[in-house]
Image (cartoon, rainbow, N blue to C red):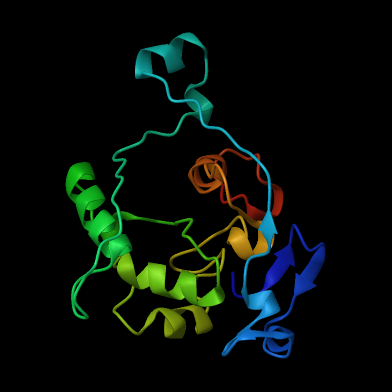
Length: 183
């Protein structure tokens, strides 16, 4: 989230003021980091047959791939965990970065969003910030990132963490208010 309404803070984050907030660790300020919070969300996984039987087809989202990878020691030029997971998920789904319309990415800090958009292959390495600054990742941009507002907006729950999986599925159903992408 580069700028916008913060759900957990209850205020609007303005780009210029974010840089002037209390320093956490250079160059990150308090409003560039997700606040710790608790919360919950859930996702119901069901077969296509069950979705039809329950009359949920209009709200159903097809999961093309689900990947779990772990961190490891790596060389300076080796792909990080996000890049490795993305490659596996794209291969399993038969898709590539160009096939993805929008994404919720892990943005515990403002830099996290920029890095993850590069790791997912949406932008070349080193160009995620340029794309965000040009407006490409805004909700009405070429590649909307974190239309929910991301962790910086809703907080970073340390425990169970299904919200990023839940949010994209609801963004196209007319249930998300300002972050809805059905228009």
